[in-house]
Amino acid sequence: MSLLQRIDKNAERWLLLVFYVMLVVTMAIEVLRREIFSYSSIWGEEIVRYSFIYLAWIGASAAVKERAHIRIDVVLHYLGPKLKALVYIFGDLVMFGVAIVALYWSFETVLVSAKFGSVTDGLRVSKVWFLSAVPIGFGLMMFRLIQSLLRDWKSLRDGKPVYEGDKLFD
Image (cartoon, rainbow, N blue to C red):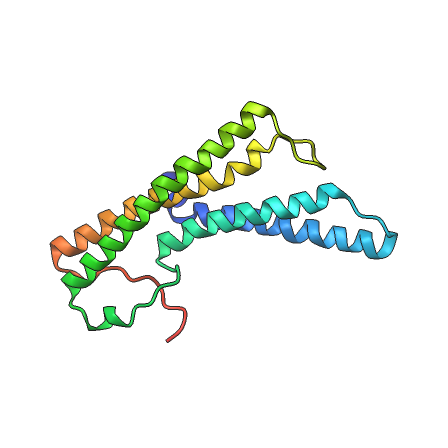
């Protein structure tokens, strides 16, 4: 397996792991500092907050990739493979349109923050780094949606069942 294939397969997983560990470790340290030493820092709260934001947006991309986002698929069980593929393609196209609009407006927010040089309260780091989580997340989602559309189009063309993702509950 090439490096690009491994990145494609596991990029979100590794990023989610990094941000989750950062969130949990920082939160644990801050709780111990608060309870044992009666002292807490504002930077710890900010690291947890911004780690959570990145975690959410990268998780959204991972959900798109694995088709693990919330959906009501009762009707899909009664559809044939071709119609089911068309429904998934339509859904991905709608989601792609929403992602384009959201990417534009979230990028606009990043540009405004960069223009005025806003910084975080505790870390005194440019907010651009943290506001960028939203356009990065939507950019990743758009990339995964393109992959999904190509995969579904191939399934439709070949008459194979469309990828439905792993089921959480049966």
